[in-house]
Length: 378
Image 1: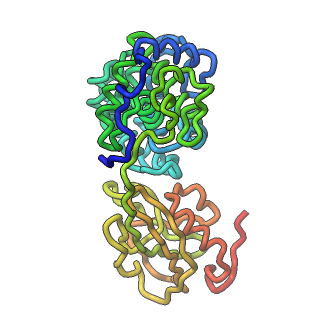
Image 2 (image 1 turned 180 degrees about the vertical axis):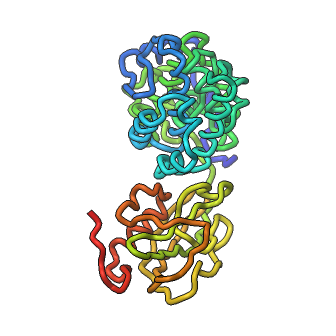
Image 3 (image 1 turned 90 degrees about the vertical axis):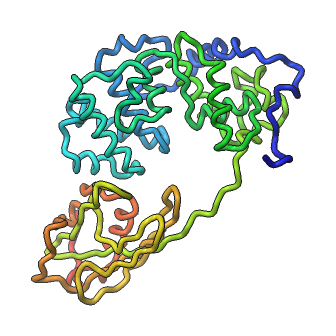
């Protein structure tokens, strides 16, 4: 660890830390300031009061919220629960429909795991396991999601640590080890303050505190219900926590996508189920991935021209995707690995964001249209 980084500061402060006082202070604050969210019960409400469908809503929200903001998730959650109001309805859905409805949320492996989990629960009788260990046995449920569902949906005591909780606890205990190595210490510290009663409310209170008070920059320490306990706050350096390791530069990749248009439709392919953006409709491309630039030939011969490029950031790399447009495709057979999709309904195709942005280049480019003409899209 860098000698200049903050250290675990328990011995550096005169005030004795009262772990037992954290939960009562935080829950009192949560009772008055809890966010109102479509997947959340009011503070103090017993999970069983919401019936057998409540775990489904909690689980769905937790999967959607991974690596995504609350504001972004709300419309997706609303639409998913309208179309598939129960775990059984989601289990019976077509893969393509779910993947299209997920488009824009990113991290598309989550959508594939969502279906796998829904079908596993439906096959087992339609009820989620009510314990953390049982939930861990379901497809796609890691340690965080299983703990969150156990606590929030079933009231089980579980140690729930997301990015907000990570920040709150690292400041509360002044944990100076850099991430990601500090996560074991953060989880251990969270365990010491997690109560037996109202564990779900406590988890959500920690999340709310991190999103509204204990924010990454300029935390609102004067409004924090835990300010008297917070070692980082008492040090005068709350923003120094959590300590983050130096970021590695993300590799930069280049690729091409191909716009092939005929009779008011564009050729779309279905990406392989396994791999990046698996199972999604997309424009054909040249095989770019996280490890290499694209190198494959265009899907058909002929004259191609560039209609511009879009830049897109993935978790582990950045991509510059150039859109190539074919000049003329009348009479060509395209094979059985795709479909002609009406351009006027391209927004309904559920394209991943990077391909949707590439499609916008084609729609905005006057030279893209067959024969140099333009279709009207209303």
